[in-house]
Amino acid sequence: MKTFAIIPAGGKGLRSGAAAPKQYLKFKGKELIVYTLETFQKNKLVNEIIVAAHPSYFHVIERLKKKYRLTKLKQIVAGGKERQDSVYNALQSIKAEKKDLVIVHDAARPLLPQQVLTNAIQTAKKKGNALVCVKAGDTIIKGNNTVHSYIDRNQINYVQTPQIFAFIVLQNAMEKARKEHFYGTDESILVKRLKKKIHISEGSLLNFKVTTKSDIELLKKLI
Image (cartoon, rainbow, N blue to C red; front, side, top):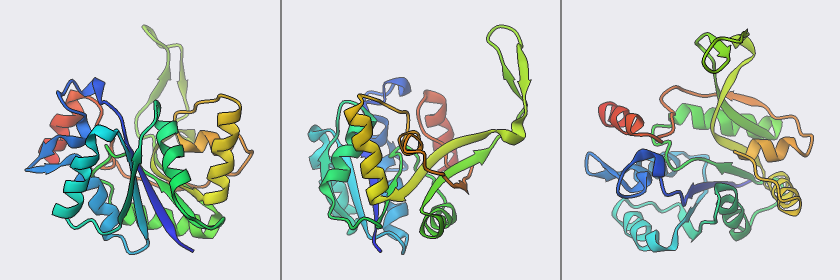
């Protein structure tokens, strides 16, 4: 059984307010996406990495691949209009067996702990899939300007990536979504539409997604 890691990196990062897409911003002299890719490069359970990016950044990724010796990075494919399209393009590019595992991880989550990644892969090997989540730790309310009601936080999880599925399951889920013109915010939503049971694996608060200016400032301080 092989394990492929798909890193969708085609976003424009508009919410960050930066001049360049956030995945190419430098932190201590190193591009954000490199921190992400190195996590998968170093993990012994990961066999291949595929990046989906805008074609205008292909040369940048190729340069980073050589500079940081990212030997597991086998393919760079064109990203699509939406994240889901980028993942689909990457999925079509790999030569995988039905039961091989496919990891999807946001390029803008550079501080994924190795143990979180390893545990998720092992969960997927045992149970067929893994969805990395963090349990809600704060009081959660429903409402806009005023409090409408309180929600039991013991039943709430914040979804992160990586998300891991068998190749054939993810492929079927994405084909179904394309046929029905359905777009989800992540891969687990697509797989759930196949009526599959999705297993939760413990995440980490360090594994946050860099989206806004505040996230960029936080990452600077952590790194």
